[in-house]
Image 1 (cartoon, helix red, strand yellow):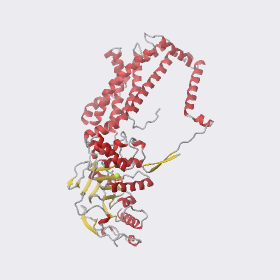
Image 2 (cartoon, each protein chain N blue to C red):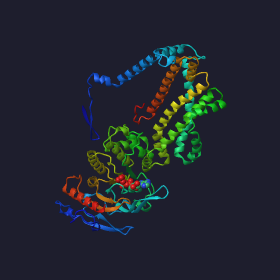
Image 3 (cartoon, helix red, strand yellow):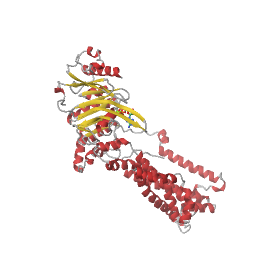
Amino acid sequence: MTTGTIANEIVKSVRERKEFSLLAVIRNEYFLYLVSSVLFVLIWHWAAAEQVLGKSLATPYAVAKELARLMTIKLAGLTLLGHIWASTQRILIGFVLASVVAVPLGLFMALNRTVNAIVKPVFDLFKPMPPIAWISIAILWFGIGEASKVFIIVIGTFVPCLLNAYNGIRLIEPELYDVVRSLGGNRKDEILQVSFPAAFPAIFAGLQISLSIAWTCVLAAELVSARSGLGWIIVQGMKLTKPELVIGGMLIIALVAWLTTLAVSGLERLLCPWKRHIEGL
Amino acid sequence: MGAPRPAEGWGAPQTADNLPGGLSGTPEAARSRTTAAGTRVRMTQVEGKRALMDNDTSKPPKIACEKICKTFIQKGTQQVHVLEDISLEVFDNEFLVILGPGQSGKSTLLRIIAGLETPSTGRAILDGREVSGPGPDRGLVFQSYMLFAWRTVLGNVEMGPKLQGVGKKERREIAQHYIDLVGLKGFEKHYPHQLSGGMKQRVGIARAYANNPQVMLLDEPFGQLDAQTRLFMEKETERIWQAEKRTVIFVTNNIDEAIILGDRIVTMVGKLPGRMGPAYPVDLERPREPTDMRFLKLRYAITEASELVL
Ligand SMILES: Nc1ncnc2c1ncn2[C@@H]1O[C@H](COP(=O)(O)OP(=O)(O)OP(=O)(O)O)[C@@H](O)[C@H]1O
Ligand SMILES: [Mg+2]
């Protein structure tokens, strides 16, 4: 145990030596992670092998084998990696296009009444529309190529990006602006020193939400019409009655979506080192 | 007689004089003011015994509030009358404590002096000029810290000089000086969420000081601290104030804090609107001991009078 004084307030730091015991192992979270994962796979395997859901549930092994096969064999001219990239590319383009416009627009709406008054009525009209509702009109306008898919993603991610940037500024404690003014700052200082940095976490929350919406959008678009992408793989599995292909596609989507989320939180940690990070679900 | 007490209009606390160890006689020159409502408010002002204090009442006041009233208008028609006829004077290098219960408009008064709020009638005067807005000549310390969460301790403290356009190297030096002064050496790179409440308020104080203001305005700065840390921070405030003399207006609802720190205590009374209560000079040498008989006597006098008024 070490004792030191920090700013004359006594600070004690205690390092406990954990004793090894069975109870400690059982209650260790990583141990529990492992147990629950293994249990899940076992139940899955049992359900598939016993055909609890008929023939349409593949065993974990069959799914793994199918995914390994897809790594080498080309489906519609692309390996699995090619299909993953096809979906990811659509998401990145749509997501970047939307956030580059929506985040600054949300910030300006929150900071400027005039901008708000001009944009708000139009935004309020589009806000409640589910992005999937745009698929048909997107295909009518842009055909079944890349443009219509990117368009859906832009539509879907625009709203949460804008909304979170806007709320991020609106929720700032007004006394923080008083601090800047009493230190001799002007309106420009208030915006640069308080509004923007304080809104950062909310902006990132918006980006995270947008990202998961982007995955929903791209899958929906690919399910309707596509020749590549993870959504298309799932549709192929359905058409060929290959449950291992459908489930494999779903697992890959979860994996890639999780990785993109990690990338965004990594960026947030880099840009907001001051934020107390919590382990969310 | 001669214990610090409100002028007769407020009903002098008799019992205070029966306590042993009475305060040495303090000649009080009481000036009377008439409020809009017609009630007489008597202000006590200390003369003599100046050796104990560094402030100088012969010069014009550093800050003066002249018959300030404040009414907030909420959502169109609803009015909240918060301050009624507040007049007070603060002298150069004086440590003035405004003591009052919650909701008596203390923060509002301080914000008016800071220039963040405009009085409905009356005016606040700084160095003979009417206050028309906030400025770096007044450093504000907030009840709820109000640190920039995205800036380190150093980044917070150097904000004032930065906004004044002071160069990077120089403002680092200024900030470091005040970080050392408040006892946060070694914590320059910490973010606010990594600090305890007392440490956060040290940052708040250093940040206000770093702008080199002529007047420090502190709004219940230790209200969120536990009793022990609070007492410690009061001692620290006294030390910092003695190291770097400034005119200070310190708002609190804690009598002990008021007596430990103040050269003079002005009370505010009432539930909306807040009015001026009696004022008390504190002729006790520093550092003050809460167990000192004269301390207790003054404490008794203030408690007694506030009970009469509330
Ligand atoms: N901007 C405002 N609009 C409307 N009412 C306000 C505003 N600011 C303060 N008030 C009201 O003024 C009253 C006094 O507030 P103030 O914060 O000045 O009191 P206080 O003495 O500092 O209280 P406390 O000790 O609890 O901090 C409160 O009832 C509050 O509701
Ligand atoms: Mg207050």
